[in-house]
Length: 392
Image (cartoon, rainbow, N blue to C red; front, side, top):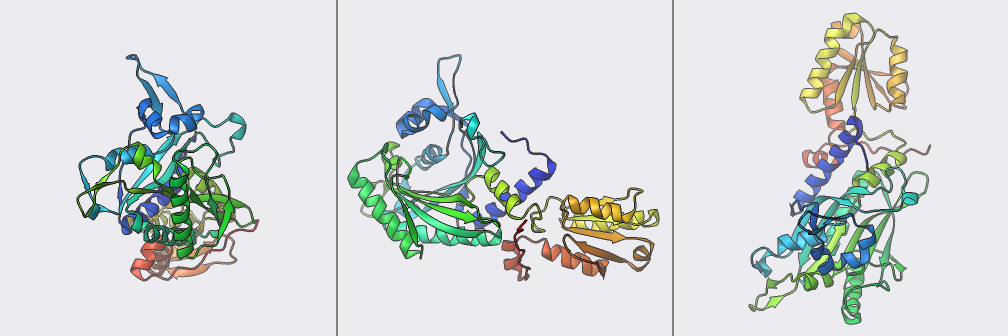
């Protein structure tokens, strides 16, 4: 289970804020479900049978058997089931940054790539059968856009069919597999078949990313489910007044924040795009004569939302530049007596050569534009440079 230090947590929050905006923009409602639920819910949903060995459970003083949630799906159905739902409310896109716990074997642990506590960018779309194709296509379009913003390349899309241990009869699976396959092809996906690798309640699409050195990571998923709505008694009132079961699309883009952040760090070799970097700018002084001016520069940047720090140490400027470069700070703004007198800064880019001397106003404009997340930049008409992934 991860201990997030300040810089790591800053990166996490920047990624979470970005994902929240993207989901808000396409009509998701965000919810939060309990960490611990009675075991009976997991038995009813079928998760206890499938994941019981990997669930953290305890017995209360009153004899209740409680389980820490390994996934968010049953909780979202509990919310869907409150009140009477109408066909007019569908599709209902429900999202949660849901913290999950699973007892993974100790030998399977792998840094932050595989952990026992993780947070999914989870979501469930409750829809009618005739809406499956359109909702799947919308999700795939969103997923591709997010990966592009994050500088990642979609390697392939796998289609995973019914596993041996599964819920629902063959007729239900036939319908689910046919619907998901047709939806993916309508969205322009070329599918790689993975027989027997589906979720226990439905077939799924698995979206894999390729990093800068060619490794492939499975991150995003889209799963079509007729089973859980039946098991947990989800229903809506159709146009003719009859009660019907919604189709449930389980979907995630990052998969888990922990794993995706690990993939991002390796893909960029720590040299993150400016909008994601925990420390975006360090203002470093050449002499103490520039200390007050350096503080003013940092105050100007931070007032505009940038993550800027000041380095006033009595060290040579080359030492400061080398130290902050090793720490992967994207921009170092060097100021001395001359810059303080003329109201300028000398910008040095990580991995670049030389420096660019700008007025403070121009430097602030350039840096704040560059630090604007891609979704907000598009909305504001800001052109952003494409950052190449690291090959080291």
